[in-house]
Image (cartoon, rainbow, N blue to C red; front, side, top):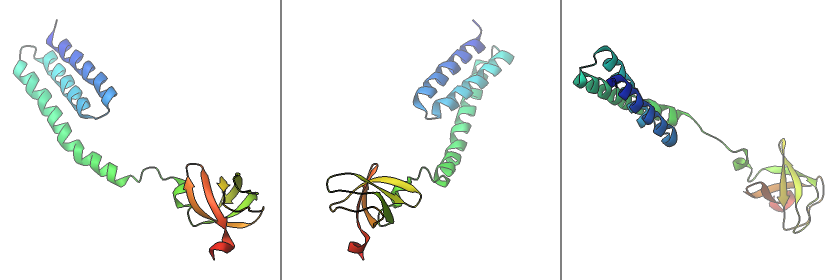
Length: 145
């Protein structure tokens, strides 16, 4: 079996492991093995050159992509949940809330399932006290002011 075929098999194995780990380190080793396969195809008996070329490519990719990925990671804001800014906001009761029951409150353009320690009628103004997953706890706006 030719040496370049062995390098491609090694690259394929590294690629499969990379897909399972998602770390990018094995991807750079995989690309180094691909470069070594190209060198082996051009110069089949230059084993040292194959290893050196593969190692240099893997090391260079590892060194230069670390700062680049850090830059992308720091510049991205990530996922922002719309519900994190609800506490303290004013809303309107759309469906009445009875003690121990759920009602519906509209805050901005969104509707939320809501509970309260007091009964609240439709169209009353409320303030959000806290949020847990998809349910908010509210109180009458007059009780707050």
